[in-house]
Length: 203
Length: 203
Image (cartoon, rainbow over all chains, first blue to last red; front, side, top):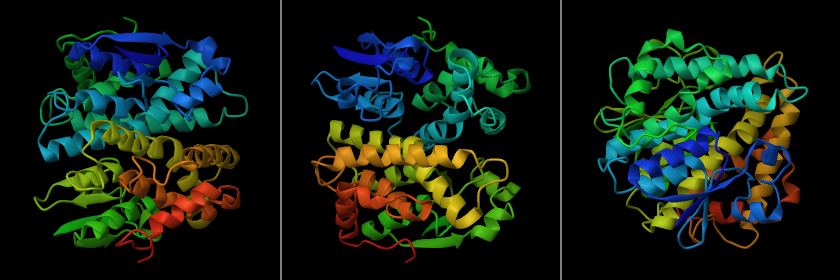
């Protein structure tokens, strides 16, 4: 069985559990809670042997090998399923949104949420919060513009691009983001949550 | 013919040109130089129609459609070639390193380089530079640890994982990073530069 080394409240971990649930793939969960993260339990030599970056999620595969990076895990399990299209151009746009999520969305929306809701703002980095909020709103603006005339991010079908971006967007309010101004994003969040086999982040 | 909307000195753009050169795919280049970036020429309505994020590179494909995100462009062109392995686990690790590059390497090494060499530090963000430098060294430490016992990042073969991470690592000194302490990384940089069809960032 797959083992997921994870933090339950992390959107990066949740996106993996959501895909696995919708694929019907059972998973054993090994939890590193907020206290464990604070205590550096993802920076032990044992953990760094799984992921030299010292971060969850890490998927421990059937062969005993370890795969870090949430979106790489999504691609790995989605390959050959409807969650990752076979069409070359659609695949490219799924990848495009996965990279966008990690570069232009997660560092702002997820980090603002982590600081506001779980860890507090690190000492000396208070000035970063408004910058991260501003960039988070840029990301939400890009989503709103993109979703204004389409049901899902790529090819009018639910894919891992939607899963990856849903993970932190649906809890953006915990980062202080006002979602009322994003009607197209909110309608898309509802469509994603209505997909067969959907699970909540705290399931 | 493919058109690449790019900034020549950008590692994210260079990585695409490097792969295309090694694949023998000709490319027409449309340059947005540093002055054009400063003047906001990637934030016009015309540019945002290509990439709502307002960033280079954007690949304009043969069908006239636009593909942003450097690493998504790499995956698109590498599919079916030796630069992206067919083996499922090797592919997963190529993806893992591509996501790592955009999340844990580029925001620190490329941004430190951009600030030190091209744009200056944005007003009011001076406190971020030492943090970005520290995280850049973490990324280089991860690379050094990974490359200590292997020739390339995945499967002992040159792939787009190497191309993506080479792009900014080989100019990390322009970000103020001291590379002398990274012998395994430097040996790998030399191996990458010795690959058939290699081009320099300023070619």
